Length: 400
Image 1: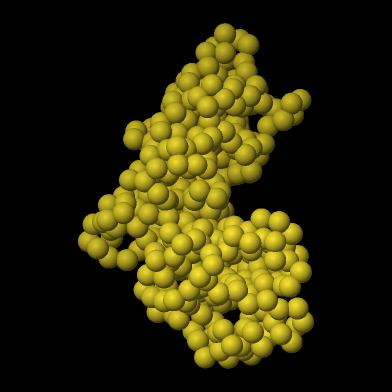
Image 2 (image 1 turned 120 degrees about the horizontal axis):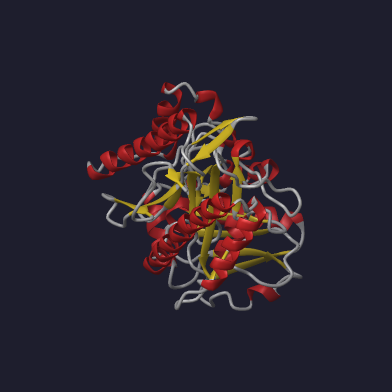
C-alpha cells in the first residue's frame, strides 16, 4: 500500500525498473492493483490517477465531487482536482507529459493479471505525451512480495493443513474398510471443521474428488451429489487455508496443497500417473534451485516449461491442461505476482526475492482418473534460495 512509510521502497523499485514513474489508474475498482495500492475508502465513481515518480512526492488526480476519500492523503503530497474531461486531460499532460511511465498494461495481454488499464485510457495517456510500459515487474516487487510475518504465518498454516490432509485419508480408509464409506462432501465438511478447530479460515472449498471426479480440476462435491470413497478409489484432496489475523494486522498468508491417496492397493495406472506428476513437480523445484543458487534470473514461464516437459515425456502432455502454478500473495490465494505459467499465459516476469507461488502439475483423463500434486514455494529474501512448504512433501501415493 502506498503511504509515507512505503514510498522509499516503491521509488527504489521504480528506479530499478528504468522508468520515470508508476501511473496508477482506476475507475470503479476495475484495477485491483491500483485500488489495493491506494487503499481509498468511500464513494469512488470517477476516474482516478496517481503518479508516483522515481523521486519526489506522488501526485493524485481526483474528481472535484469525490474529495472525501482523500482527506487523509499526506499533506506534503500533490493532489490535482479536475471536473471536466478537458481539465483531466490537461492535468494529465502536465503531470506525465514527456515521461516513461509504468501502468497495469501487458502488451498482447501476455500477462492478464497485470492488464487492467482500458485501451482508451492508454490512448489518453499516450496522447498526453507519455510512453507507457508494463508495470508487471513493479507489481511483483511491490504488490506481491511477502513480509517476514506473512511468510511465518504461511509456514505454520502449511504444516497444519498437511496434517489435516493425511488424517482425512486415514479417516476415509478406515471408513471404507468398515463397510460404511464416507462420501466426498462428508469428508470436505470434516476438513472445514478441522480448519475452524485450528483457527484457520478459507474463502471456499476444500475439494475432495474421487476417481473420475478428480479429472475435473474444479470439481466441487455437494450434498446429495457426492461420490462414496470406497475400497479401490483414488482420492484427490485439495485444501487451502490461512490464519485469520496476524499481530501486525491483517490476515495470514494462504497455504495451498493437493495430496493423493489410494484406498487400498493402487493400480499400475495410478502409480504411473502419480510418478509423472511427482517428477514434474520435482523438475520445477530443481530448475528453481539451480538458477537461484547460481544467481541467475528465472521466469515463471521457464519453470512451467521444465515441469510440463516431464509430463509430455511420459505420454500425458495433452492431459496437463492448466498452468503449473499460481502466485500467492496476501491479497489472494491466486495473487498478482508471477505465475508458473507458459501455457495459459506468457508469464514473462522474474521470480524475484519475496514472492510465493504454488507448484502443482496435474494429469486429467476424463472418465478415468485425475491426479495433482501441489506444494508451495517462496523465493527467500537473499534471492539465492528456495523455501518449500510443507516441510515433508508427498513422495509416494498414500495407501489408506
